[in-house]
Image 1 (tube, helix red, strand yellow):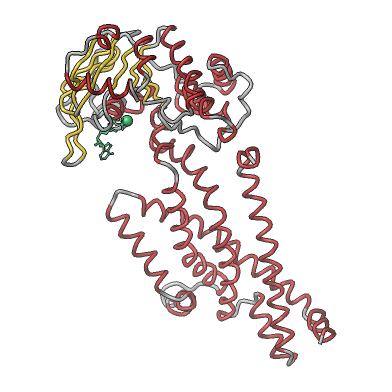
Image 2 (tube, chains in turn brown, green; image 1 turned 180 degrees about the vertical axis):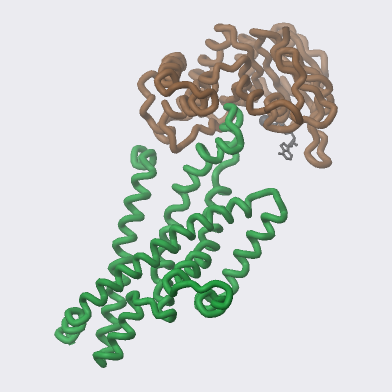
Length: 245
Length: 222
Ligand SMILES: Nc1ncnc2c1ncn2[C@@H]1O[C@H](COP(=O)(O)OP(=O)(O)OP(=O)(O)O)[C@@H](O)[C@H]1O
Ligand SMILES: [Mg+2]
């Protein structure tokens, strides 16, 4: 069964037609990597999946096989089931690391404080930061911030994780520690959709690579074949640009 | 001159002490109200509802465009056929309505200055609009609003002197009365000024402490 699926997904920003009929289906435990040039609509696609952006009328987004109707369904409940990690972390600066992670389980799920702390501590060990629970976000490196952001999303026990260029704002030497956490998650069976420019990572971890251009999926396939023999001219151009950058 | 200054301080000590209490009451009541008014109008101004925007803009525009003394006189004498307010309450309401407009702009600016990514991160975790505002945006906005709010409160404290013209015995009106009686306006107004200055200094320290207390992360990072 597909954890998430879109059918004929369109999105306009005013006159600008950003998504032009995206059909995407992500199976349970599948790791899908999305690549494509700047402005091709990768972030918008992710943001439509959890309704941070409203898809156009007529588009369909399905979660666990059920069509989500923004007019009828409680979108807060829908978002609870999906974790999202952003390029710029967006940790809550007024909360320490532990409380960044506990705030949603406590307030959204009504989890008791003691239980939420236990969950948070467990996740902090998982992302390799067991000794940082009392630290403030302003005291962390970019890589540490991003790992806390991942833990924060995982604390809601999501069915799927959405990663939007989570290493793009990091110094090069901090990229590996974050990718390692994502890779561990994938190995643990987490379903995920990840927008990234890390082609090495895509090759190694992805089950499927999707190339987007101009609001459409123009090509996709399992990574070995995809990177060895891209068929679309635009994919070839894009890959030669990012691989030789 | 120093000796006559001491004389004035000594002679009117209890009058000024009582007056200081009144000034502080006026300030505290009006600014507490101003924070409530300000927060409400900040939300109206940020709302997507055009009627709410219009209401907020009208209020802020009118207060900005008129002197406080006019509002004071209006509330005390102008509407006395409709509601009769004591001079203390007419003064407090006028100060609150006046400061409320500026406080509204301070809150609006502070809320808008919070990165929209904070709200999106909160929503992505399943928080409602309301929860995101209450748990994520407002706490950060309040911290950011403290310095300009402190500034506005100091202005409010000093503006409370205008309530003297309604006959409330606060510091300034006490000085007027005293100067008329002791024929030492130089010393008397100097003393009144010193009272305000000391209050403002104390207040400045308190605001600074509050800011430090509310931003443990900034202290830790420094
Ligand atoms: N809120 C918005 N309002 C208007 N236009 C937007 C908005 N968000 C995105 N766009 C536009 O939609 C297009 C796609 O943006 P999107 O962020 O999805 O691209 P992307 O593929 O993620 O690019 P990048 O690799 O630079 O992150 C761009 O032209 C962008 O300017
Ligand atoms: Mg993007």
